[in-house]
Image 1: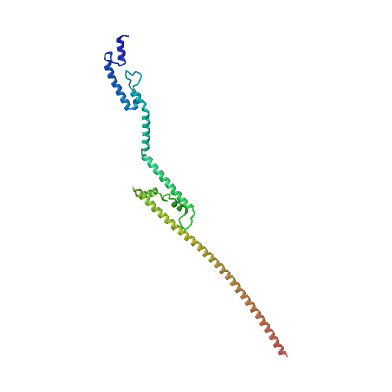
Image 2: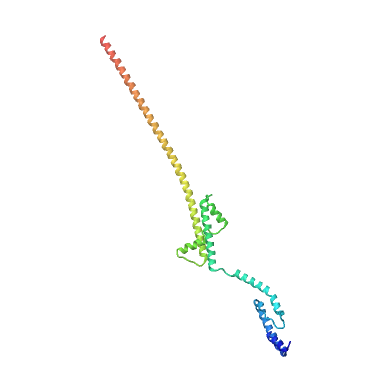
Length: 257
């Protein structure tokens, strides 16, 4: 092959002329270092490495080491993104939906407690079984704070401190407890009054029946007395008529004699 063809081939390959091979080698090493440094700083571009003339189809040791370190770098980056997504706060829509779900759950528990209170029977002079169980179990206030917030909001009252809702719920619980105690006492008194009224009505009916029986007996006795008196009067009249007849016969016989 002639020297001219060799020079054209070197120009096509981007190689410097043969006379300046030492300078070309020193100059060609600089872009290789630059590309290797860029590859090391940006792991995502390791597939776009530039090949130097001296390497041919083989990459430099720096690029090879950078390609071997890309896998743990990507793994660490994915783990960092996962932790960042976990630490990222919820969106306003998700937070509002979570809060509404919690309030609905509190409302459901409140209505369930009311239904349990209505269905259960009272035992003893204290509170009902459901209220005593709730108070002993410490399951929170009977009136949820979400309900208190909505009631106050419907009245045009707003607050920022949750302690206000807690105090209002505690006051509502105390009010409900007082109302339940008063209702229990009134119920007991009403039951006692109903029993007393029932006993009084029974005694009154008994007295009425006794009075009616006495009245019937009295009328019967007076009727019998009247009949007896009439019979005695009739007997006396008969006796008088007999005596009068006998006396008249005696008078006539004496007159004849």
